[in-house]
Image (cartoon, rainbow, N blue to C red):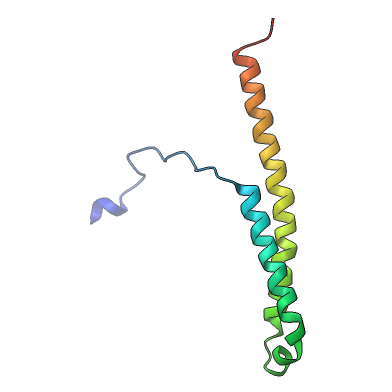
Length: 94
């Protein structure tokens, strides 16, 4: 058990997995906004029980999701530009 807690790992970390990040964040954002809209008709019920934070949490999730969509789209574009620049350096056009 002592080896488990002693220092840094003996191997390199694997490369991070890349997937459809933009689609995932967009889907999550849509879910948050749908949950917000679905709870709006029941706002009085939530208010009577002191649970209005549920409604506002969904709105905050949707708002933060919009920021997330902006971020991952820019990140995706930057990754594509970097890969294109790498390919340009490896095989320059004559």
